[in-house]
Figure 1 (cartoon, rainbow, N blue to C red):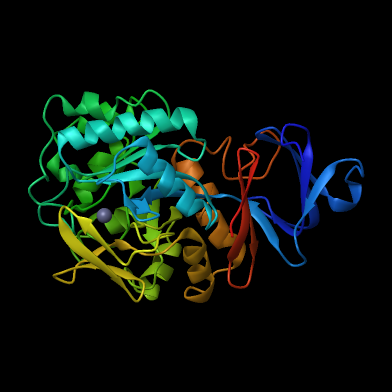
Figure 2: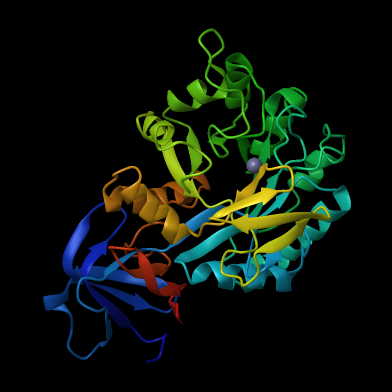
Length: 384
Ligand SMILES: [Zn+2]
């Protein structure tokens, strides 16, 4: 079927980002959604892709923290080809848009990553921009980031971090490690700023939020914990309606009880994978800064036992929400699409199945959340 002429996808269940429609169809023309209608009212002359009985159709997943996939690590391969491999690997698991994520590295590597993303934002709709996780992090909370590259910003860094001409730039930083007004210098240029790998106090967190910080990267992990007299960033995130916090729901990074606590917060919870090369790849080992990382039992660990990102894909994160957290499927789907879209300022075009929105969709079997197909800007991709 021609993807330029109007065509439809029909399913027993269509989640539009807010509610579930029974026996409905999404009509697409080119890269856009025209309408979502009851299947019975579909014009019989329109080419229709009918999903198998019981399958769901939902907004494609948006993953704002993807270090790698398809055996490629973005830090090792900061090229358009590397990004293309990562995008294809994650698309099989329902991710229709993502931010390639560069963890703490040299200025030269950051520049190469930004140049590669600039090329891909123009070429590949599945690339929304870049996530720079670091290098302005707390030396006390490095995780697997290379301590030798963790540093404070110099005068040229604000210009570098705001240099992407198209697409979104997300920067994860430790607010206590950057000068006053640094966060503002980024947010006034449209950069999304998230707190992460940080020992910021509650007060320091609020000061950064006043400068425009709205995100919290992998809440709970690599940040000052909740304490009785120093609530730190976690309390600041949970009590703010204007906060978006990402969660790694792999059953390893955060205890399910803590995740359920996060879901009680007033802010917006988002799913991220923090995925490493093994996702959608064939290898169980990869190199990070020249050190060997091994994947075993769904975990990526360094030789010293530290967690090094995750081995999950977004479909698994959604499934874990329903199984580990007993979350209704629509809530998990919203955390995988609509919430990250609004955090990135793209909530008017991504994350919903509604007229005018980009035709990014995922079709899946709801029990195991097994993805069968995706559409990215209206283009069909089989998952098998
Ligand atoms: Zn991290």
